[in-house]
Image (cartoon, rainbow, N blue to C red; front, side):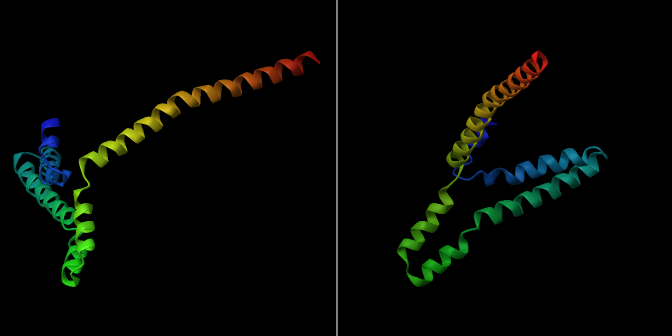
Length: 127
């Protein structure tokens, strides 16, 4: 899996047809080999459509910049298409950091709450 992600270039959309075919074949495999083949074909078609939509997302901006001769617009449109795996890795790292902070912070806050409630009950019982 790491080899596939490393060789997919800047955009993971190259894996959409493969993922669609695998998902379609596994879903169709429940009904038999014929349905698995049909599901794989349908999944590949949907994945290829998703890949084309992702790859051509900035096409209108690029064409508009080319017709106007806007060099800065062409460069910014090209840079938008280069966002890919590294940005997704940073996003996942941010999510992991938030998860670790919550994993450690929630038990601390819960323990403080339980301690305050226990202390309040203990103090109410003495008077």
